Image (cartoon, rainbow, N blue to C red; front, side, top):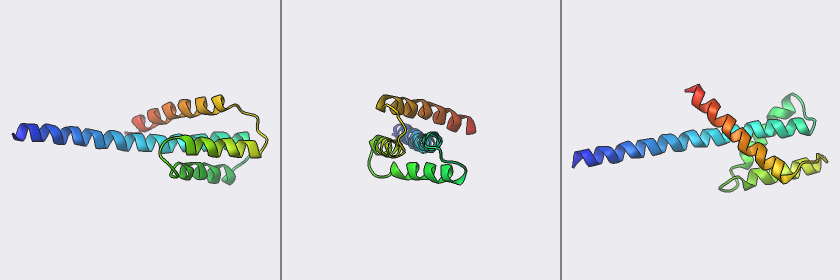
Length: 107
């Protein structure tokens, strides 16, 4: 019986670790995405850092990526930066892959 319990704890531990890594990856992606969008909007220096933090915080509004997408879309539109929804979503996907790699390599 203890073998089954140990196996369950092992799977649970793996799940917790993978969930933690994914959370960190998404947060890193959001920071990178915020920096990308800030540069498109012509922000510089401390304003880039501040905006990237706003994007990370925007992800806390609801589950999934739509809250982040809406913030980026709204802010780019507000600064008259022409960008398709597809391009924003593609950047989100590419930056998530980059963030996962960075998190993985940081271990």
